[in-house]
Amino acid sequence: MKHPERWWLAIVAAFAVVVYGLSGVLLPFVAGMVAAYFLDPIAGRLGRLGLSRSLSTVLITFSFFLFIGAAGVFLLPLIESQISGFIEHIPEYRHSLQARFGPVVEQWMHHLSPADLERLQTALGEHAGAVAQWVVGILAQLLKGGVALVNVLSLLFIMPIVTFYMLRDWDELVAKVDGWLPRTQAGIIRARMVEIDQILSAFVRGQAMVCATLGTYYGVALSVAGVDLGLVIGLTAGLLSFVPYLGMLTGLTVALVMAFAQTGDWPLPAIVGAIFAVGHLTESNVLTPKLVGDRIGLHPLWVMFALMAGGALAGIVGLLLAVPVAAIVGVILRYATARYLESPLYRGTERT
Image (cartoon, rainbow, N blue to C red; front, side):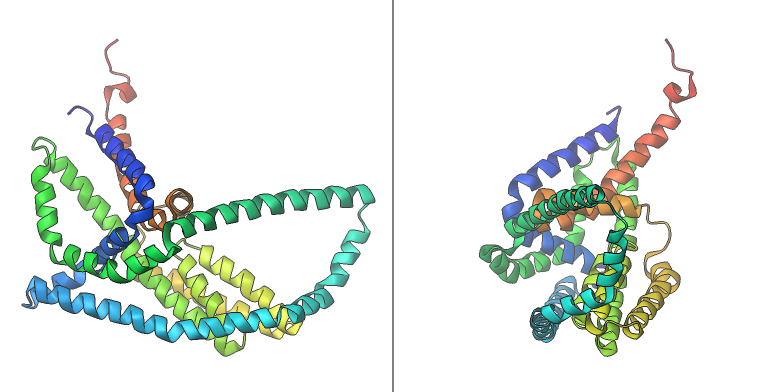
């Protein structure tokens, strides 16, 4: 096998085609595998304490889904209440924003000629339509991939079973796959797989803890400050923090607009700014260095592109697989680049 990286890229491409074709039924299986990978280190620690793998798996799986269920029971009523209150107060928000920013906008538009105003309205309409079409397309893919009743039921009943068996048999599956590797390339493939695992462990597990911490902090802080929809904005900002800076910028923008819409004055927006400043400083100087590290090998733009592409192509299944696939492709491309830089073709010593 002269160029193994080509085979690896071909396998990744074939895998992507299969996922795209079967995305409608893969959600509980992929979600269960992701959960098992996330929980595997805990099972390893319990095993080193003397617990059997089966008992460790039972305890971990039960505790994990019990925590998810308890969080849902606690949070869903609060989120529903905030969304209902937001809908009821929309006319008040619109009036407050118009009173605060209407004169500024009118003064700015007063300096534009009728032709400029017409061009501005046309451009805004075209861009707004394009953005709306893109958002609707993404939502349609997500709904197609994960929110249908059958998939919701499959998440409730099949995902825990998949998580249990994957977590229990994880070491055996790894050993079996290792036995299938071509013997001449086994060492190289193992080294690449170790690199992929290190990246995923640092980024997925670490970034998930960062997102949970930030979501809790932003949600509680905004709610205590009195921002309407604060819990929803905070949890969303924490979730979007999976891509560095995206969660903070999105949450800050939405929270500032909401704060202005509520009060029409500066004190509450100033508090919102302070909340996000503290959160960002804590994330940059404490959470990310401690939980993620600085050698993950995944650029934020690459992660953002992978998540958007995965969501557009395969819905929630694509979102779950986006970062692992991005890590695998990144490792393969770095290995191929390193081989190219060491090759006679690059060094100019190839025979002609």
